[in-house]
Image (cartoon, rainbow, N blue to C red; front, top):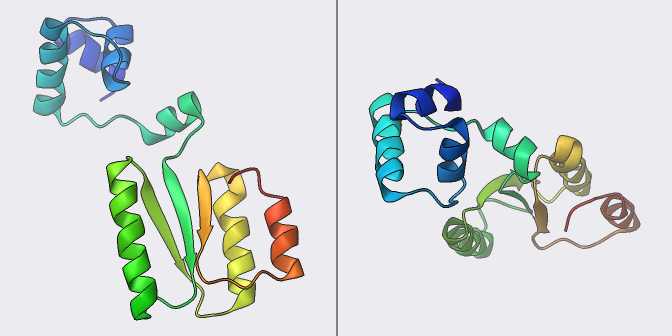
Length: 139
């Protein structure tokens, strides 16, 4: 199932389906037809296509020192609430307080533009961190 098939089944153009999926203007009648087809077919837009089109993943990498820490858990819960409200998702990385894992996650998260931003929780910035952070193309 792709956007062209959705368009054909809804009796609209591919561009109209694209506008619908991207919250652009679509008449109420066409909006209902597209919504019906999507519901009936279970169509899910391609995440990769959206990333290519917008340049955004809507993912934030969160690097934490200890997943079983009460304070870190509260912080992660708060971040999760904020991300949910703003249509972002969180990729969580637990380092077990190991600096080398923090550096590795910085690299992994930024390879192939996997995340739109990174949050380092409770990190002591070392020269190695600073070098890794300078090479990032994201906030």
